[in-house]
Structure formats: C-alpha cells, structure tokens
Image (cartoon, rainbow, N blue to C red; front, side):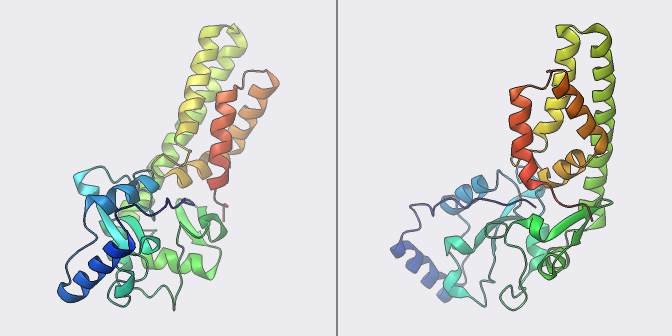
Length: 247
C-alpha cells in the first residue's frame, strides 16, 4: 500500500448530482456509483491499482469496484461523497465488507501514509500501529495464496535481478565501454521502474530492493564510478518515499 493523492472531485459530482444520486440510492438501493464518470477518475488517482493491495485493475479477473471507506449502508449520505470513495479489487472490497472504520480505524491511503502503520517482513505485512494491524486483518492483506505468494515471486525476481546487476557491473569493470555500461544501466533502470508509485505492488518491490544491502552497495559503487545517471537518481528519489520499514 502506498500514499495516494486524491484528485479534485470530478465535475460530474456537482452538489446537485450528489444530492440526486444519494436520494436515488436511499429510495432504490441502486449502485449509483457504478458509472464511468466516477470510476475512471478514481482509477486514475491510484495509478490503475487497488488502493489497498496494489494489484492491477486492468484485467477481467481484477476488475475495479468502488469501495466506500465508510460503509454505504451505515452512511448512506456518503454513498457518492468523493472523499469516501476508493478504487478497490473485489477481494479487498469483500474482505473489508461493512467494517466500521470510525469505531475501529484502518489506513485510508488517501489520508494516511501507510509506512507510518505498516512494515514488511518475510513477504508479510506487519502492523507497527494498532491501525496498521487492524488494516491487515480487515482487508486481509496477508492472504497467503494471493498476496504473500505475489510478494514472494516479486522478492525472487528482485534477488535475481540484483545478481544480474552485479554481473553486469563486474563486466563493465573489465571492459569499461558503452555497450557494457548500457547493459548495466538497463537492468538497474528496469528494477527501479518497478519501485515507483505507478507500478503494481510498488511498496513491496521498493521495500525489498531499497533495503537490500547488496543493491545499496552497488548504487554507491556506480556513483563513485560516475556511472549513476540523473534518470536513475530521479527514479530512486521517486521510490524512496514509499519504502516500508522492515519489521
């Protein structure tokens, strides 16, 4: 989970339209939020990912649902309140269900910084606050078959590419030519691009990569050799704010 920036409410959700849709929901129970005027800007605000687990919401198996942070049944007045809506995958939305976030708070990535409440250890999220622990349980962020296994696969790939990066660094030390330098830069850039907020599972990937002592050592060596580029530095600075603690 990463900190998200909520965009201004779409012009579609005028005061009049909000009142109209709210009244319609109260009278009919209709899913008044299930329309592209609302879903598209929501999805854009989360870089096309579930706001909770960061899975991509681009495939039929991971279609987007509009999640009501404060449950719509208990809070019908907020059924199309822009500040109350989040893009979610079906599994996170189903897990959260009708949980009362007022009585028993969880992380809202549009208001809270997840790294203040969550840490990562052995591919599992750990709560470093009561809110973090509650979030993990309520949204089921350690679902073993889905999320923990996804993090495991990410960790294995990150480890493999760190080894490849070192191999290419050693090759560059021998050849010191443009070809070997570009091969090194290519693999490091590819790794860092998976750590920026726009990438799927960015928080997990950034944490695994940018807390790895071997990769941090490689960064230092590349900087000392003046191989580290401005593009790599920009990617690094974009990724660092979403790195979770390692519990």
